[in-house]
Structures are given as C-alpha cells and as structure tokens.
Image 1 (cartoon, rainbow, N blue to C red):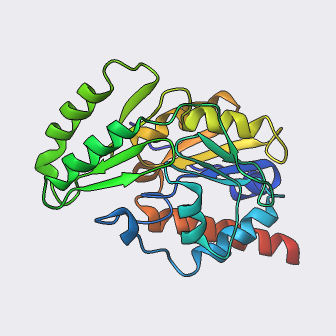
Image 2: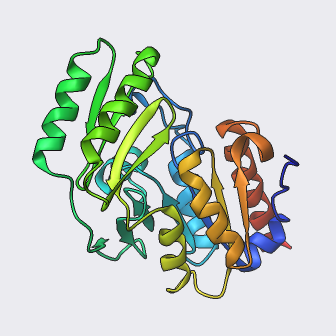
Length: 247
C-alpha cells in the first residue's frame, strides 16, 4: 500500500480538523492499558494546537473519557470515546452518550473470569463494553476470540473487534467512523477538512469517514513510522503556526 502523505501544514492550520487516535498513535503501546507513558510535552502541544485550530482537534479512542482526561491532564479536549459511544464536542461541553446498550453483567463476569484464568491476561471494563488484553499472554488470543464470539452470538446489538493483542466487545451501533461524522456535523469541526490519524483495524471506519468528508485518513506506520513520528509532525504544525504568527 502506498503511504499517504499528510496535507501541507498550512492547509491543516487554515482549514483542517484533526482527529487523533490515542494508543499507538499519540503514545506507544504499553504492556497493559494503565502502563502507557505520555510524553510530558504532549498535553501542552495538543492544547496549543486545539487553540490554533479554533477548537477543531479531537481525540478519537476506544478508551473511556475519564481515562483519556487523566492521561492528558490538565489539558481537556473534544473527544470521541469508547469507539464513538461517548462524544464531547467542545472542550467545555458535557459528554453526550449515544443511545446504545451496555453489555450484560453476566458477560462482564464471564470475561473477567476468563482473563483471570490466563496468567498475564487482563480484563478492562468500560462503561458500555469491555476488552480482554493478551499482550503478556499472546497464545490466549484464539481462545479469547472463540469464547467471546460464543458469548455474544445471540445478541446482534454487539460486535467483537480485534485490536493490538486484544479483543473488545462493544455496541454495534457506534464506531470511530460514526464519531468522526457526528463531530463533522457540529461546530467547530463543520466545514473543515478532516485529517484522521490512527494505527489499528478499529481506526479503519474513521479513516473512511474522513475521506468521505473530503479529507484524509492516515495510518501511523505508513505515514509517520511510529507515534514519535506523529508527535514530531504535530510539533512541526506548531512551528509553522508560530512562524506564520511572527511573519
């Protein structure tokens, strides 16, 4: 696949709307979800870019909103969390939850018990779903997939998603693509050129949504190499903005 080139910095600053995945895009993948290390400069850089773009910068992640806010504190940003189930359209706005079902408690208990039976595996609860992580138990991935497919087989309202050495059960009605579309329909994103950056299969719907709205979807490995490359590109955007302001 031919790497996609990011739009020129000037175009992004004048008319762009940035949609950024978190894990594997802004930060490196960690052995466990809570072991992520956030570059000390990232929070301030995102806050400044958010201001330079008139508020049109959002984090689009499978993480719960409270978790993202904690990682990026003290910066507060627009966000689409839990794969589009929860939206915060502006930094100051309250969160809006889509009208989607939450997974049954019995499923949560079964998934937690399954993770507990595998050394190194981890169950991660989310308000509307959950994940089973196997980064420290990779041989368990096929077992987890089979068990979770059986668990949700009779309820079409839910979907099983693959991620980085993990499986996630989530409501089918929302995904990162519906999140990008919903944000693009609202100020301050409306009328801008969407630029989505993601690294995983869960980001494909958002990449397609950005392209449908006249923008571009970028895959980390192809366009930037790794999260450090994404952060370097964001820093160049800020340098360009500073140069334009000084001219």
